[in-house]
Image 1: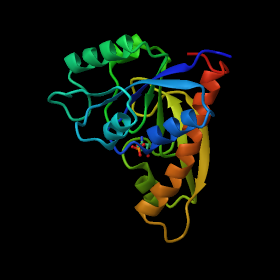
Image 2: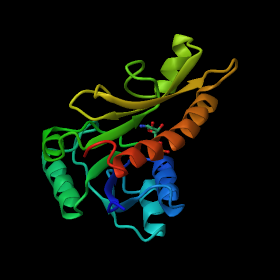
Image 3: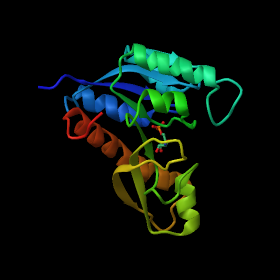
Image 4: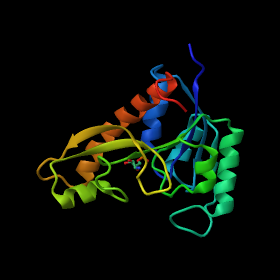
Amino acid sequence: MQSPLRLGILGSGKGSNFRAIAEAIDAGKLNAEVRVVISDVETAGILEFARARGLRAEYLAPGRFKTKLEPEAEERLVKLLKEADVDLVVLAGYMRMVKAPLLEAFPRRIINIHPSLLPQFPGLEAWKQALLAGVNETGCTVHYVDSGMDTGEVIAQIAVPVHEGDTPETLHARIQVAEHALYPMVLRQFAAGEREC
Ligand code: GRF
């Protein structure tokens, strides 16, 4: 049996994707170990959830920018992830662009989940973009992270139907159900050595 895949999780929100990953680990369905959970939001649910499970949970003060970390903060982030000796950096609702220090420290070892079938609807609130565009199908994507906004190579996707009468909330909830299946599935492929990191 391979040694567990060592994960560093970054998130800014409620952390339901992280929860799905943690539950897959607990259920013995994913051979991985969460080494550290880091958030740029001090009150984020993802940190609370990690602490409640006895995991290492760190708040990282982001500095003065809204869409990216201050360079010094990003250097601290790299240090935390290196100290935690992670194999793979998993963005789970992390709301900032990833910049050179992190990209260079973990080449092709940072992945993200996005609530659309990329390259359709990159950026914020992709489920609202899907509703506005009037498509009858959207979905979610796990992809490698590069310096662009949701532009990295696609790893896997699940399609989700848009129903008549969907609101942004109902559609996002349906996409999230698919996300919670997709992320653990992709991580299993990394853990089994079917994908390199
Ligand atoms: C998800 O919809 C994910 O696709 C997007 O941000 C949301 C995070 O949700 N990147 P959660 O914090 O994992 O519940």
